[in-house]
Length: 154
Image (cartoon, rainbow, N blue to C red; front, side, top):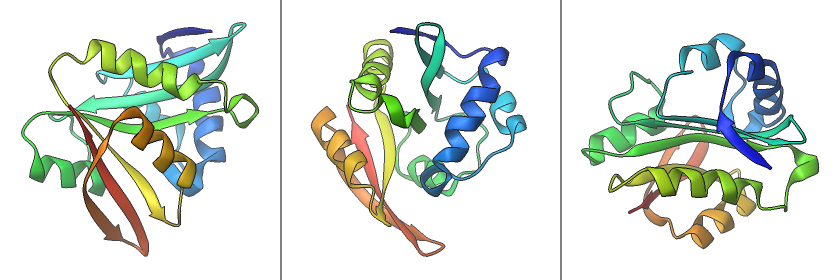
């Protein structure tokens, strides 16, 4: 497995992976990913040169209008916001999300990480994963009939 910075050539696969999981992360167009190519962390993980997952995390100063991002912006002064982590379904359970998170944790310095996970509808595997990594719940947010748990990691 190889983790590297996302490149323009990766965007069709990133878009495909994202939109398969749109129930959790919302359906996007390729322009969304093009707009955020230069955020703090935009990584892909490859297995034999095939992209099998990706992670996007941005700093608190990013111009981003996500209601979840803005919730954190109102609570914390400085952070990296994990916007989405998606692993190809055929590759789950192989530690890929852990590898992507480890890269961010190793490089983030003293800046905390924040993320949210759906609890209504429930994304139980993601809740368990974030708990295992060491994230702590710092609140919940309900909007558009969905409820998310807000997480923080020093």
